[in-house]
Amino acid sequence: MFDTNPTASAPGPVPFRVSDEDLDDLASALAQTIAEVKRHGVILDRLGSEPDPVPPADQQEDGAAEAEADDPEQTDGPASVFIVALGGEAYAVELAALSNWVNHLLLPVYGREISTTRPWCAQWHDHPEAVARLHALWLAWQQLTDKQAGLAGPSTWHRDHLDQALVHLRAPDGPFAACTTSPTRPNHRVLSTPAPGYAEVAA
Image (cartoon, rainbow, N blue to C red):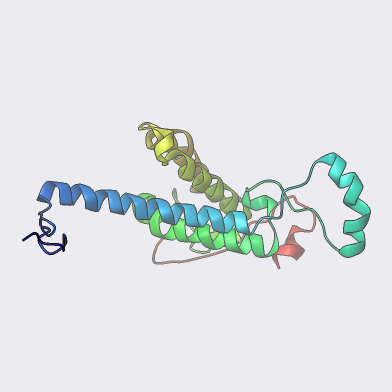
């Protein structure tokens, strides 16, 4: 007599064991994937805070009157992702992401000691030049540490971006010249600039 239930005698799944070497590879791949997801999340947050792309010229002409009637206070935002071109909430979001990178990656790895020849300011975010240079450095880091940049990407970032940025940021006459020159004597002062009305904005 034949068994009419084919599943009754079907063998179960064969158990297998992942070798330690393969397990290390899987853990490394998972760590890289998590890091990449986090990096993409930062980029998506920044893109989400940017204004909508500008439509083609013909559509702008056709819909200009309608747009002004619907929202007369609406203004075009900057096309650049550079932080000095941002304002309001977009600037705050970008500065928060930059601060996270500076505090948790740049300073622990490249901070070095504070001295009169290598000053630093814990309130670097109050110095416009420092914010601009650090943000440019971070943008380059995102691009040149990506897999698509190739194996020489990190070396290029060190040579062409990091070294130059630190030379200017931590120079004795740089943006932190009036700030901390000793870890035991913290100091912070934004130097005046030739920009008209800067003092009022900084105050």
